[in-house]
Amino acid sequence: MSKKIIVSGMRPSGRLHLGNYIGALQNWISLQDSYQCFYFIADWHALTTGYEDTSDLRDNIREMLIDWLSAGLDPEKAVIFKQSDIPEHAELFLLLGMITPISWLERCPTFKEQLRELEGRNINTYGFLGYPALQAADILAYRAAAVPVGEDQLPHLEFTREVARRFNSLYGRVFPEPQPLLSEFTLIPGVDGRKMSKSYDNYIAMSASPAEIKEQVRMMITDPQRVRRRDPGRPEVCTVYSFQQIFNPTGVADLEEQCRKAGVGCVECKNILAASLAAALASVYEKRQELLQNPALVDEVLAAGNEKARAAARETLAIVRDAMHL
Ligand code: SF4
Image 1 (cartoon, rainbow, N blue to C red):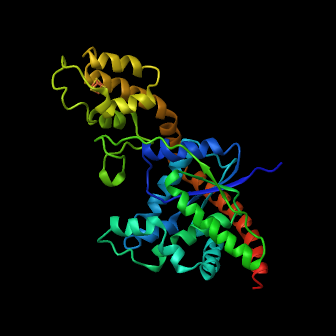
Image 2: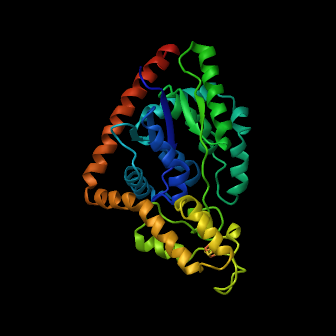
Image 3: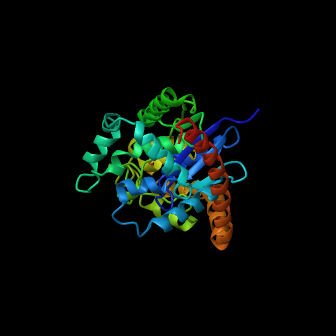
């Protein structure tokens, strides 16, 4: 029996951080055995909010692709490609645009939210308003059965399902309505305790070297009330402890107990975490070094993925054009 198709993309943001790795990439990796996965670099989506300065875009695309491969996305199992290399996404976006009421786009919760959040940046554009339709085209171009999403992305998927329904009711059944594949995302804090984010500059790169990891862990905020080594600590307010829970599951209970009775110092606790993190990320770091030595291999992976994606999207667009009598 052929595997169900799923589609997911990521905006190219350069080297990924631990939050991306734990939150999304590990989920993608775990899905690639059970589904026919299409994973794409969403470079057109990056333009919806970042069209004014594209000078880093090519580097960001490449760095993210290298991180994907370093983490374990396997081009033998998943189709890995770049959105802008598949013009069928743009054609389907245009065709879906013809049948999408503007009110559906305007009521998308992230549209208003982002307009508020990114105040000061001129994103009141046709492209930004239309990006849920582009997202629908990304998914429907492969007639995906499901899309891995977090709770917060459900409205977007519902939009895609509505567009698919409308298309099917006008021109006959072409698209399946993609189902949500709900994933639990583990959130990890940044070194300063806020959400890990590049814009806060509080992140640990997913492919950091052991020395970089040590330095970042050294900067982590601990319990501010624990001033001296002999003061008992409160792990529940400590960023180091949050990381220990994820990356040192076997040692975390003992560290918690020791922290509360001042049996372990923060420097030692951080050293333990840095060692656990470096061990957990060693294979990612090593694979990245290998890929950096072999840029042609990275190009080949993308070219082969683009070819497979394009063949699948072409097939869909032939059906779409036929259904619309174009
Ligand atoms: S001992 Fe560890 S968990 Fe306790 S406050 Fe220090 S760094 Fe945090």
